[in-house]
Image 1 (tube, rainbow, N blue to C red):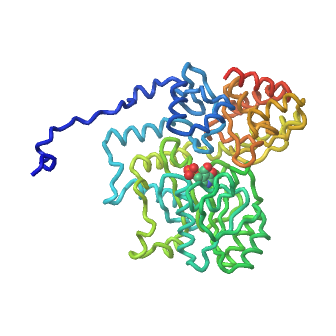
Image 2 (tube, protein in one colour):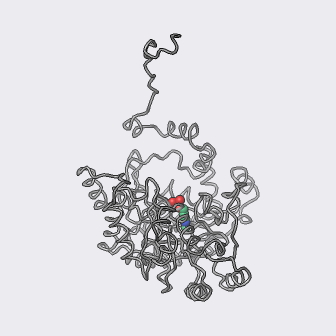
Length: 480
Ligand SMILES: Cc1ncc(COP(=O)(O)O)c(C=O)c1O
């Protein structure tokens, strides 16, 4: 027997411990080190955009309510709200307390072998909140996963001969491969091999949907965001949704409403479709459903549809929860968040404070009609579309800007985002497809005073005029 085969004859070699960063060290990392690690191990190209916005040097130490606190103490007012993920603000005390107690009591997170009292309670709460017979819930961890589940339940219910999907121009439903196929972005779709079987129509065009359904008997599903977020906060009127409901009832097509961004009270109703007084067949939530502390997504389907898809013991496991679907602490976080939503009347607050925000922005628009094109949206989901200013700049500055980044050419949004942060400590966001829209999705816990801080800052910034705004931005870039 050779020595190599006698395992006991080989002296154990201690495994070299890799140099691992500890939690405490992670908390103390310097901005420059974080940027270096980001470039070395995450997404080097993305740093370019962070630099344009001037966000690459900001390290958040802690966050509370509508504020981030930068290391060094600067307070940043959050009007971005994590693309609608922060309805409850940062670290809502009741949500923190529920999580703390859950951990202290050594409750379990993962227990896939057993029925979960937490997942069952969250599902029951979602059914209680959801109108009509939207009663059956699938829990996951992201919006994409919730939307995949939504499309799949509809497809299963319709069967393979009615599985084609109608979706909208400028739609955003996520980046996993199924929903990427109905996400209208050449950039995100890139050259991936997509899932076939869909037809695109203009958003809010009922006749177009009617036409494609009439022309193709395989169409059985319509998937739409109730408010298009990535497109630039674009709404369809109540008549469209009522017409869509009637059309779907007439033709047996299922309507899937993507409420991942506009749901959980953002527009002044729990679901944005409630403004039109109609109920879809399937819907999906995520983002704020996790209370700003956990990753929770949910698909909610009408009972008869869910049962058609997965209602028997033979079909039950076709799309049962994934490993992290319905984890204990995540569910408890959501349960508490939903209770807070009603106890603190955050939906009503969203409607009232949102109306005030919109009214104040319309005043600013009247003051600067050559800079602001339109104020859109409702509740605390507001889009501020800016004018294309590419021709308004002196030639030299225009040239300078276009060497920095193509996207900045005609878009004032990037400059305003950069300067709102730098000079006023306010964070805003942009929309995926329309780079000239500032997306405002602040936490639903804000009051009029936060609106005033934001709108006064915007007004002050716009009063500098386009040339000064751009030259102030360029000066900051040189310092980067
Ligand atoms: C309307 C909509 N649907 C789906 C998604 C995907 O959610 P996630 O990023 O959690 O996968 C998003 C995310 O921005 C969204 O806005």
